Length: 168
Image 1 (spheres, one colour):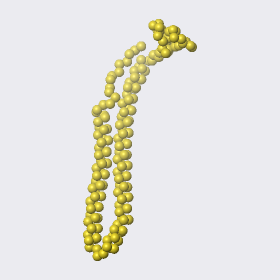
Image 2: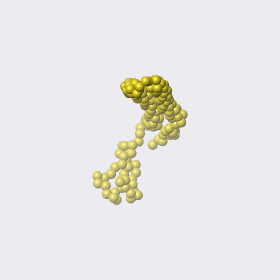
Image 3: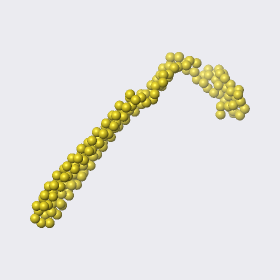
């Protein structure tokens, strides 16, 4: 039997794994930045609106005008709340899609890395012209004291287990 020499290559390599990790982190940070920008804009808008409402409430002549002003703001507040959460959802979907793309690229790289040793082994076996297969044969009813024989693919006996042990 011919021995094939396989070169050791680590399963995970820094030169290919680190850029993928950085891409994933960059995508997550970009999503976080968008969320922070949305929150900052929401707070600024809310503060300006509250300033206008406070000015309108202070300039009102009666309590009924203040109550009317607040009741007019309720539908607008609901629309703003739904718009805010729609933007949050869009950011989450966009970020998730980016992360899924990075993970798919990393997974394809891993599959390629795992396939390389298999390709090397199969090409080495095909270069040898044949592969050696070992078959073990047992009697129909193996007993504790019966030795087992190992034969190759052509049926020729390679060795016996004469030491008293068995392949059970």
